[in-house]
Length: 293
Length: 255
Image (cartoon, rainbow over all chains, first blue to last red):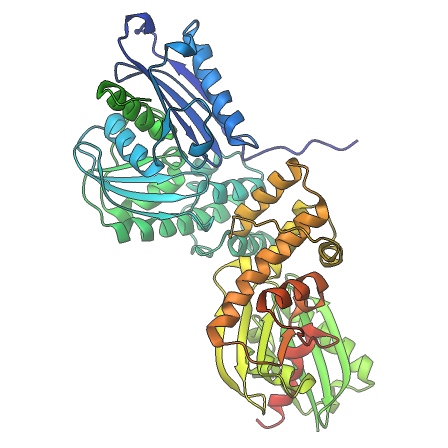
């Protein structure tokens, strides 16, 4: 009998609700849904504060993924009817395919706005590394985008590239960061231009007797270099904040931040929800300004 | 004079024995992990095929990404080797495209097989055989069957992803959307051909156009190339993957 293949790339999905808030007290309820290439998030806001969110895997189509993310967040709310939403904004790779959204806003704008909310108004440079793209964004104290650069044509440096390595090495994506730090000294980085080349190189290194930790360290360094080259081009102004799944990977963060030369800002929020937070905030502003649906 | 040309590539290592400019022996083995072993094995095969001994070879020319591992050989530049090899098979060749496992190139050559200009892709696997290999795994179709399968389709499906890694997810999406395998296979070949064609356009399209490298064995790819270049014929040698080794064996004669 065929053994089911373990999915090492599979990361932990989550649902959260604010125990101290009741949606019934809110004047405005808005939702932001970020359908990314790999993960989807729904954030529900009551008067501009996060009341619930979900963070889940994107399925094979955008409308279903948006629905799934929203349902999970609604489930956490217990009894909040969807009709109560004043405004819903879709963002991300699949933003035009979010059926319940009143309008869509680009993920660049949403990430800057979301980072401004979850990290605070001091943030000026936002790095977002998601499943299929790297975004380096400069923004002002209101979270408005002043400049940005994006790489969405190549998997090198993205979360998807890290998933490929987790699968290759048979190490859970939740552990790759810590494991990569288990080496005394970083080996030279593998190819930072192409995940396919990096994977062939890594396979050779494993054959030569390198440990999984060494290979992970070599790949993490290559990925950090790749990400840094984009951040450097957009220009770095403090404070510096990181959103997306990458912020949870210490193996990348510990290698990237010395290159940046700044301490990253800290947050208690799940860094993957930044885009959806920005979308919900746009919804809040748009609704209060009285923009028609 | 007897010369040997060895092309140690990312996927296969090829050896050619030339006697006074005529091919008398050839060998081809998987490169695998140990390049030295592969080089020796390909040479042993070629000697056997030619009916000669190692000591009969006067000069060795080495080329390919693993050329540094070829001991006692003169290293021949990859681009020059491809140009000369293509010219050997087709003297009227003016544009040569080489699509190997991990790299691809387009070379403009003159009537003597000398390099005039070239473009190269060595940074991204999307324009190389690795793209087709990865897609054949995603489509659960043996690599040899990918091209013939694509030939049976007339569908025009555009793939959005450039990157091999992203294209893999896109192919899985197409499978889930119940798109026929032959149509997906054609979409894959069309996508890859468009990358190679844009590289060829950088050096200009001059007939005859010759295709060398392992991907030359793929009829689906050749058809996609012809249609995108809007030309009737692309010449492909019988063993397109041996062209660089032939070129190396020819060029070493005069060194």
